Length: 180
Image (cartoon, rainbow, N blue to C red; front, side):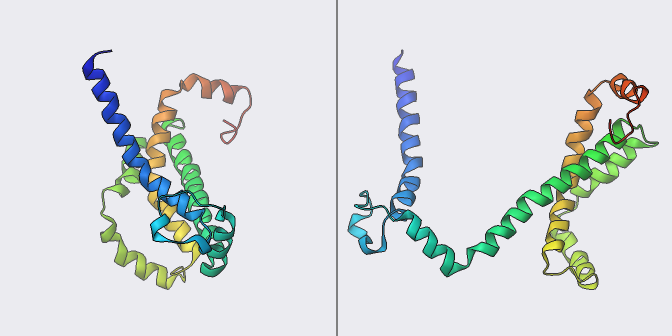
């Protein structure tokens, strides 16, 4: 190995160690019981393990249950809905060969050209009238709508690369549009 390669590896290892320092501090101090909380012991491993007790106290004092449930709702349900709607749009545009399919694609994907700030006032007014303001359903709807254009782009490109004869063969074998 050349001197340049050794130097490069040394720099990468040093930068990796610097990058891991905050993670080390986070884990070590989260595992420290409150009785051992001392700034002079910040870098040392704790004498006893109190991570689970600390997590239980944080969970109960901060009321994290509903927040974590909301996070899972928004991070799992909204993207799943966006993928279903985007896959349906991509399938319809590329496989079903809609009339003016590219124009429909531009219409769906065109929603990404508007800045989010431009959509805030109409969304606020519309959500107020529909009683969706400050509700979980309203946020799931927004997160889904924001992700649909990208999902439609990805799925349209995927379906475009699959041979059309595959869809025709499935149709001849008796598969419905939803089965395909």
